[in-house]
Amino acid sequence: MFLSRLFNWINDIGREPTLKEKWVKELRSGKYKQTRNTLYRYADGEGGAECDPVSEAASFCCLGVLAAVIDPNSLKYPNEGVLESMGVTHVQCVVMNDTEEKNFNEIADYIEGASNDRK
Image 1 (cartoon, rainbow, N blue to C red):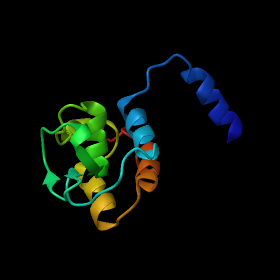
Image 2: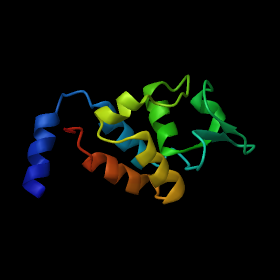
Image 3: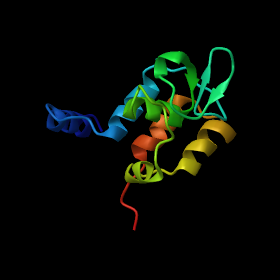
Image 4: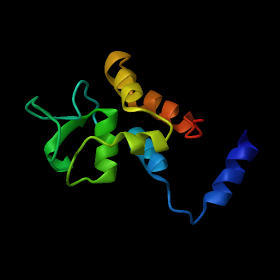
């Protein structure tokens, strides 16, 4: 396990992280407070769906974190094709975040292990 991770780390030096890797890193970063049932929520408790800058939002669902990674100046629901390219679906993300109430680290673990090799 250690040698495998070391080998992968050496191979990744100088490579630009993928969107999936950036999303997983941000979910684990501790920068985002988690919310449920909305893409993001303002400090006053109001939820949002689109077009508000990250700096104004107080908390995010896992898809809100992805939206912030994609474009921090315009939070919009990520398109299903983007999610599928990372091996997950919108429904899976919503269920994990809102229904199962998994924390960002648990969701990041799932996303990291998801394969986009669907046949």
